[in-house]
Image 1 (tube, helix red, strand yellow):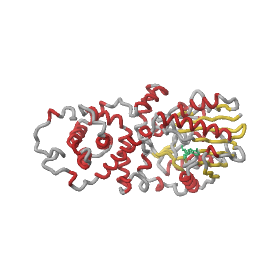
Image 2 (cartoon, rainbow, N blue to C red):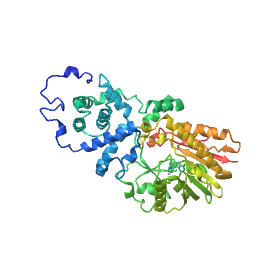
Image 3 (tube, rainbow, N blue to C red):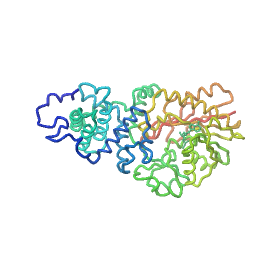
Image 4 (cartoon, rainbow, N blue to C red):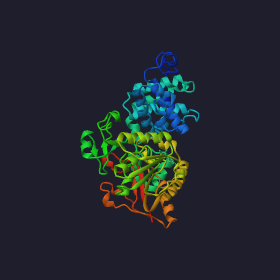
Length: 464
Ligand SMILES: C[S@@+](CC[C@H](N)C(=O)[O-])C[C@H]1O[C@@H](n2cnc3c(N)ncnc32)[C@H](O)[C@@H]1O
């Protein structure tokens, strides 16, 4: 296996054949360079995401995460995260660039070499890491790994070429959608080629932090140096640092919630004084909204640790709810509710701006299973509301099999249920998100001038 066009340049150089450096000993005998552990952690975690389908967030946790990150400083963990986000956000382009520089593909067994190259290329192409540092550390990594030692020279050659020809290489892949093929094909089928491209393009932009404010959004926009979106959420475009340090956090004046995630609660209209169940409630962004809207809320959640997190979030906000630890399918209250919100577990394909691992850890078979589960949960949720009551179903998937199509199936077979269409006049700035049936469907390509929004689906159903 050789680098395209590198053969003609090969001359006897007097350099060490393994490291490509003049006269040096193999790097695996030396102490690791600063930054080596960060790259090595990023490579291991990328392998776990792509090859083992392990979600990224848990692996980056300082206490319970992947052993490779546990000993790292906060700054180093942040760098691991930045490298991985860049690598996963642009994976098809990075892989195409690397493949184009080889005249034969990497052998099937060379997965760790693939990951090492992707990690280094992501830093060179999409982050401000100096090329020489990314190249040196990648060559050192190759030398440290007995599986990759024989590829150290190739690693050096590929990465140096990426450094030299960066602009042209990036231009050569600029039309490639950064989605796995199966997902892009599905987006084209559902939204059409142009919209699918816009969605793929939008998901490459990291998402800003949005917050929902309890009262007086304009005042908090000033204090937090944020911008009020047409949807009412406050966007902190220039935010850097940690959330708990921001003004208003300790006093519970606001909570973090993507602008799209704040939309489903709006479908209830006026719920002051009503008994509302928030099903699948943790970490509680929508529970907080329903309480702020004046409802008496029961929050149901099956995960103990997540319910604890919801309770501490509500305590910080000075809010109260009845919290029930239960699988929703086993939840049988004494009295039906006036309204129910089911924000169902889903594939989360609308959140790839924040979670670029999602599309590499989930596949079409997961989406099909989740759609089945959602239908079961919705059918149960519908039994929990009184006649005349309202059920809002929502989730953050871009796939209509988890939204529009499933709702169609549930409504189609039941004369006692009716979709309640939203009025586009109430959705200024987000009119495109109102479907012909009066549901809400956002994609990351919407609110583009404001920096985008997560993909979300929401629909209101009345029980007659
Ligand atoms: C998308 S998250 C909900 C986000 C939440 N509504 C919010 O706005 O903060 C889905 C939640 O559903 C919970 N969940 C999944 N299956 C459940 C079930 N069968 N019963 C109860 N909760 C469930 C998960 O533990 C997870 O916390």
